[in-house]
Image (cartoon, rainbow, N blue to C red; front, side, top):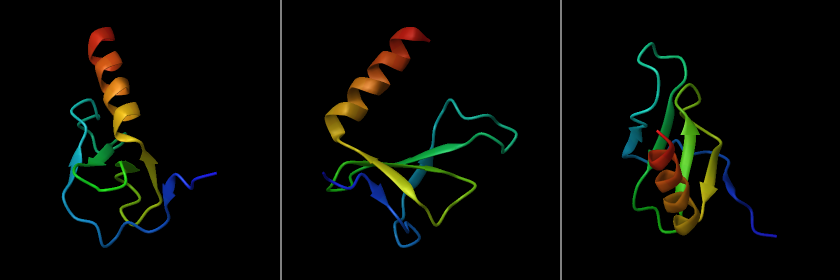
Length: 70
């Protein structure tokens, strides 16, 4: 089984906050574009990790479904 987490993401830069995160600083999801192994996703309250790592195709399908439902 392939590990789908990155235990410590402190060295990775370029995170962006989801446009659907709340503005009060509470529920913030951040993603990192252009990572060679997929799309890392983390909780902004834990900037050092861990991050979940999604295959690019699966992440794209998820985003498309969320946009279609919203």
